[in-house]
Length: 383
Image (cartoon, rainbow, N blue to C red; front, side, top):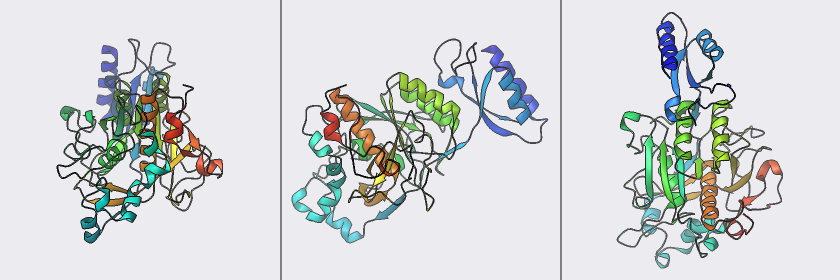
């Protein structure tokens, strides 16, 4: 390790003599140079360093036996949001459980995603609500005082500022992590009886905060977050993406996969050019890449058309309480991935087989294997 520090120190000094430098992620390989891990065991967060290097310096470190990769940027998939009018907010002030006090059409709007993936049926089964399962979110942070999820937050770490590691509060103007966590594990009830229920309402959330207030992250942060998650959970939700492939992230995903961790990611939200446009890591073969459908089970216009797609889930017009407690409709494959993560928690709690889907009679590029089905998954007796 001293040798590593000496080389790193030398590189930092030398960097002042080069006109142009890029930020790289540096990890020490083992003695064979075949894997990322150090000679002393598994890769840890402390093995990962970020350095400003010139191309020449990066090449020198590679030749010295270090894993060196550009510290490229991950981003939150852009998603649509439409807040309800004040009148609608008043109509829905009882939210989702006091059904007799809600207009029928509003209640059907709220519960259609759970009905579409048959999570409402799985909830009636023993261990059909994700009991005992922790889901690690690699996201923007979480509103720890949100009444719908405050009782499901197990732990977390702030990779934006490791000196203030326990601050997992939302920094982004968009409460992405809070929304996704609520969709998965929401189970809070207010004193007035108002409440919200998620896909796996008896699961727990661990938040690995990697996005800054501008919605940006890096390979280094996500790499550290994945290691952190793999030490604590068996389900990891990655509602994020980048238009590049990361060999470093792939190696960490491979290690987690071998340990039995299920990795689920959004396919990405795209524009007019939808063909073969999945973002990474959703496109990685070790990850369950999830596209979006609407209430009519049609592929959403922003969902990629890609052979690497694994399955689809609701992701358009999803009604959720935001950071301030108001309701809004949200759309994006981030929410689709969250539904699948919730179903995976149910699967693990039930000790069932793999994730099951229903064929929508669409092409593989549009739907993967079909829409995720919580009830079929929960009842699969072939683990």
